[in-house]
Image 1 (spheres, rainbow, N blue to C red):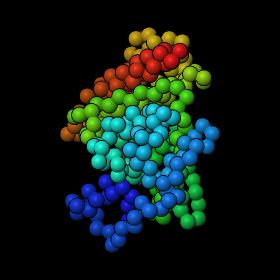
Image 2 (image 1 turned 90 degrees about the horizontal axis):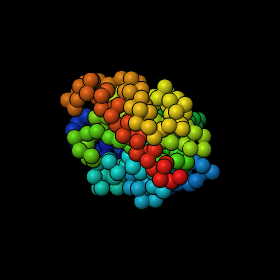
Image 3 (image 1 turned 120 degrees about the horizontal axis):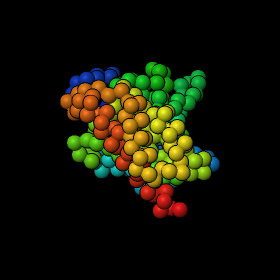
Length: 259
């Protein structure tokens, strides 16, 4: 079993859920630590940590940085990798929301092939992801933000707790459109296509409260929540609409300030 930050694998080892014959530590692999910019794309090596994003790339990846701030503790963020979080396949992952809204892709490689997967589709179910037994995630390709991004999360606490629901909203003023991604409210991350269409159609009136309310309702209608110990399906759907409205309002406020 491969291990990088170890924040997921070691938990599973300690509780006896896994018993691999060996661990292959990737942390010394320089190629997987490489970060570079290719035009409007940031290529983050698979062992890039949350702290790396916060301390080095927040200016160009503000949405991913905002989501990273809500993940666990400083000590965990220093070790935990973005790719590791994706491979653990938690559909409530905060970074997953930001990556989905940004239109990021996951670069996957085997000894014989290399392919790309939309980040929002990489987690296919709780505990499952689009990764074959002979493949590794080698990088994340994340578009540089071309407008304001906001992330709103509901949980037992603002950080160090899994999201009951989370919504990221990114605005793209040059293209006059917006993108969004919801997590924690379905077996996968969810891109609410109809809600995104509303942002494009109502671009000139994004600052109206009615637009935010309609957007929130459309995002809530797109999700597929399940009840668990952290909340009922009804509550999760309701709070998703609230979070979507808040995230859009924050992003629009920032857009107005920039103008």
